[in-house]
Amino acid sequence: MFDALSGKLESVFKKLRGRGVLKEDDVKEALREVRLALLEADVNFKVVKEFIGKVQERAVGQGILSSLTPGQQVVKIVHEELVALLGGTQAKLFLSPNPPTVIMMVGLQGSGKTTTAGKLAKNFKKDGRRVLLVPADTSRPAAVHQLITLAKQVGVDAYLSEERDPIVICRAAVKQAASSLYDVVILDTAGRLQIDEPLMDELRQIKSGVKPSEVLFVADAMTGQEAVNIAAKFNADLGFDGVVLTKLDGDARGGAALSVRSVTGKPLKFVGMGEKLDALEPFHPDRMASRILGMGDVMSLIEKAQENVDQEEALKLAKKLKKNTFDLEDFRNQLKQVKKLGGLEQIMGMIPGMGKMKLPDAQVNEKELVKVDAIISSMTPKERADYMLINGSRRARIAKGSGTQVQDVNRLLKQFAEMRKMIKAMSGGKMGKMGNIGKMLGGLR
Image (cartoon, rainbow, N blue to C red):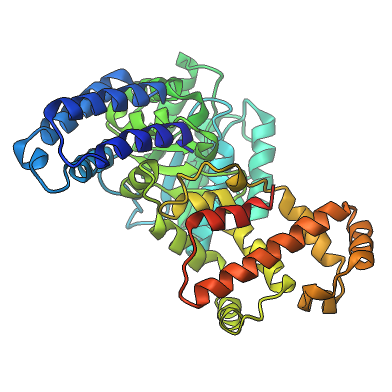
């Protein structure tokens, strides 16, 4: 996510921070590079022009250039303007004081509306709310079946009807939800491969008929500026309250996320960060700006940990780390926790300083986690408790039992030994370099 842009911005700011004195020409030269980086990231050119203008106006002031750390001051200004560009503050969903809250999902076919509806339902269910999912895309039977399947997976109800008119379906579903005391109704409306008048007319009639609390436009972040152009068209023809960008975890450029707020005037409310049903995150402009500039996102990491990490297990682990009795079973359990948090690379991106690491050793292959689990599962309890017992013949047996090669077993044991050394050094107050952590994680590739 934003890899290319983050790397280029870090390079620009590294030069600025390395200079004790800055002249106006230095700042302008740096901002020219920032402008180019944003354009290459597929950010709307009008948005880029306005952004650079605001930063330059603030950054060339005498108070900045004559400060003790002018380079840091310029970076601070860029961060503040980036937060403003992304929306300033978090935009939350409006929840009706008189339930049910009706949320209408709109967007083109293939943007991820149906999956996002399921993810949103899971978020609400986690908060203790009763949710009704409504399949209103009767033009595509597969969408109806998909939403019903998602409802079962999430553990919420789906509205079932023999009716073929989406407008009638939505009205009847909202009426039933009100009488059955549902808290939230999510309408999964039809999409098309491109915007056409029959689609927009249908959506306008649904909106007029049910008067939703929120209309959310769903777009695929991977399509870049095309997603922003479509959002602008939807907003002009229909009007919506917020944007959900799907597949943001796979968008290395980030142009849509950086442009959509300025172009449409509507906030980005959620981002899809993966295929799983819990991979929908509220959008925080300040946190995203920090991640783009390589400053990490510790708050999101803490929230993820609070939601996914077993507190009792965490306390047990802390005691083991203190006593230096961390074994392979603990190692495997921690890898499982890492998967719950969204994967190693996503976690590294949230830790200040680690998101910028470009070492080959830090490139993590998540599929290798499955191999590691198989190798550890093929060990005896004694071997997991004391890896020093694992000699040549045992390594051959473990490799055969896990369907891997002896080299794979050797690499895992070497990685585990390095990890124990690092833990021992850290517990002794010797915080190793971040690069050592990258190398340790890099064994999983």
